[in-house]
Length: 236
Image (cartoon, rainbow, N blue to C red; front, side):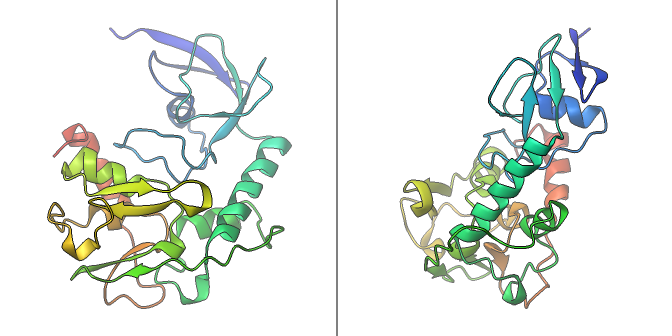
């Protein structure tokens, strides 16, 4: 029998297996914590910081997807402070690159867009970076638009942990970070790419898309990837 621990999440007593994260414990209790980098079947990295929670006795906010649940914890997943912090993160993501929803293939099918609406982000208070990153159209089936990437690394992890191809990685630092494949080759020249499309399906925005899709046509099937990972232990 697995060891069970008890903790309180938003005042509710929750029992989960030892080794679970706060995010998993909240999910088991039917509580939804937002996140753009987290996905079932993929290793947690805490990249987007949208899943932050308050922990009694700790001054700083903690990412719930990488913080282990421990006996006796008291966790708050929704508060004015947390909501303000999450809105700020979404605004910074929108300001960092050119997320123009009206001309995006993932318009109305975008997790960043949906989260912005849910959090009530009606405008951005920060100066737009207006960076101009290249668009890689060299792959025969897919396209990579760096201008819509939020560097959540879902594609990096699904390629390495499920497909075992290790095509993707991240280069640069800060706002200059961007996806690269095979030490900065163009996608069409990547000999390790199997063309499976898993990276495209898990992308939360329109950064990775199928060629031939017009505005609002790129519907992602990321949840099917999650179920496949759960049934196969995360490795194909």
